[in-house]
Image (tube, rainbow, N blue to C red; front, side, top):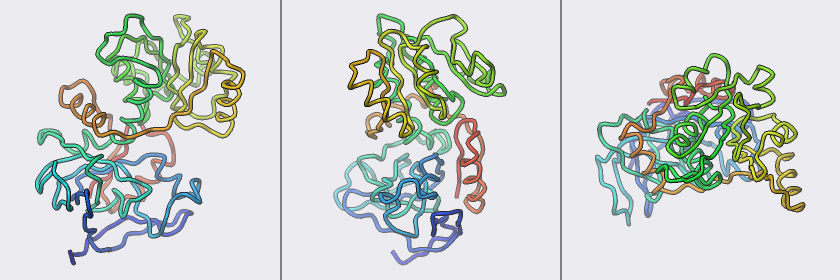
Length: 329
C-alpha cells in the first residue's frame, strides 16, 4: 500500500522526546491483520520502554510507536488469516517485541492469534483496556490466586487488591467478585465509593494508618494479594497473609524478586509470586464476552485525540489515573 497515514505518535529517543510523523501504512504479513484504529489505551509498560527501563531488550528499533492495546476495524488480512475479514470489529494486542507499529497511530498490524472479535454494539473504548490490564487481572485472579469465576469455589477466598482503582486493579476487583471471594481493596480517598461500586466488600484509604498497614477492617487474613501498587515492602504484606497466603506482584521490583527466591529456597508457606502475563486469545475473548453481558466494565479516566497523545502520555506517567487512559485517532 502506498498511502501515508498522518499523526503517528512515535518515540525517537529514550528521554522525553515525542513527535508526530507520517509513515507508510504497514502491510500485513502471514497470519497478520491490518486495523484501522478506533482507540488505544496506555499502560505503564509503554513509558517504561520510552525511559529505557527495558533496555537492551526493548525497543528493538527506532522510530518506535508505543501502545500495545488496540481496538478497531479490519481493513486487510495477510496470507493465512482465516478468522477475520475486512469490516470486522476487533480488539487486539500489538506484540511489543515484534511490532512494526503500536497503537498511537491511525493503523496498526496485529497477529491473528491475539486478535479477537468484538460485537458491533460494543464501542472500542469499552474493550480497548482489556488486552494488557484485563488479561493481567484475569491471570492473577484465576491462575495465581486460583479463583473460579463461575463462583463454584467451595471455600471463600479472602483477597486483597492494592491500587484497586487503577488500570489492572479495577478489573481485578470485578473479576474477583465473580468468584466466591471476599475482596478488600486499597485506593485513594476520592475513589473509595467507585471501588465499592465495582464490588469490593471493604475499601481502605491507602493514606490512613490501617490502609498503609493493609489491615482488613474485619480482621481477616488474605489468602491472596493482587499487588498492583508499588513501594510496599514484604514486611508490610507478610503479617496480613493467611498461613498459606501469597502475594501476586504484577510489577515486581528487584527486591521483590529476591524475596521470591528466598521464600522458595526456605520453603516458606507464605510466598511472593512475580506475575509473568501470557496473553491468550481465549481469555481475551472471555473478557470481551463479560463486557457484552454487563459483568465487566472499563472505567475510563480520560480520553485524548491522537494529536494530544503527549498529554495522555504525561497523564500515564503521573501514575494517578482512575481506570484507563484512552487515545482515539
